[in-house]
Length: 462
Image (cartoon, rainbow, N blue to C red; front, side, top):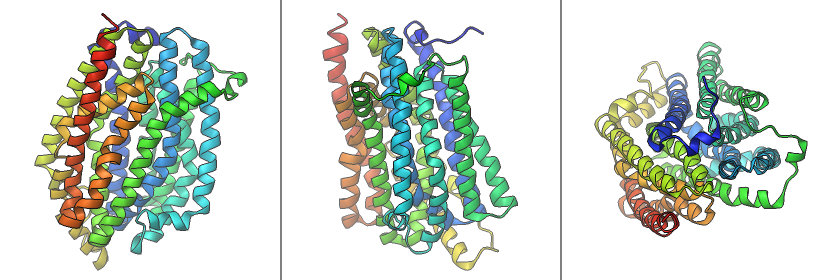
């Protein structure tokens, strides 16, 4: 089999190339999403709905710290893709070295702070009542593994920037398989409860990190750095920060959203509605995997060709990515509109041997999730434009529009909506905020993307 190199990003037909990039990315995201989904199913059936709610409280905290690794990875990978496209390998090597140093400095510092303020953080993210204790157990153990996950997420984006999507896919599959195996062992066989769920997840982070470390140590990677590349350089750090800040800001807004949602829903329906949102949140991560896969596959293609000034190929990649993502999003939408109740039953057990309180809570969640799920996914067919549009600006190094468009859905529209609409419509106000925010963000993104194509990609290529 011929060795895959980054030059293929500028040579192969865009449609074929996008499939080649997006399919491994989609499979990787699918497997990673299945990890979260099946993990929740295991926890819900073997421990209970309170455990699902507890994990939902912890997720935004651990995701935010792990997102530091991803943001450093995405910011640096945009530079690496463009540097390889411009045949500037030394800049690519320096960027990768700076990514490693930044990851170590930031993530370790934040984990220490997270452990010091554990009792303050968990209640603020909705870990109240019966949710607090299991959330604290899960949070404390998970936090130990988050720096490892951060390095793994950073490395994964760099692998994709090199044009090696199959290796990136494998890196996402490994933690999923190991987590599910350890879930079964620690929770079901060894009866470790929340401790078992947390250690299984932390162990899976380590497995992923070891594989990525092997990749960069092997001949498969073009990026062979030395100690001189690890020294921070102001220009590179500044560019990584400006571009990676888009990803970090997006995850920060996601964490704020979880904080607000958990607290608003707890006030409206106590632990039950928090558990409902936890299930819907898992489906948000899982169901849209093919759309996110197309977005991830699009990034290196757009970045490489923009760096090489092949603007017609950039335009073609935008149009093709939107078309593929829209078709997939519509298929997801149809499935979720038809089978929301059946999906919900996968997460919880109606085992009569459960404690009466836990059984009653399970029954409440089972009967109250289908309608909110339909509302949350009501605008799914149109989100492709919003995702690809925001990703384009990030891929080509335009940090400010990328940041604003990335934040538009949740930061500018969704958060204000969930603060206002529940005051008038109660629980329904929470759920209808999702499609309204999707529609508004898509309209804004479509306007700016169209203007960019007309003024930059068409004008400068003619």
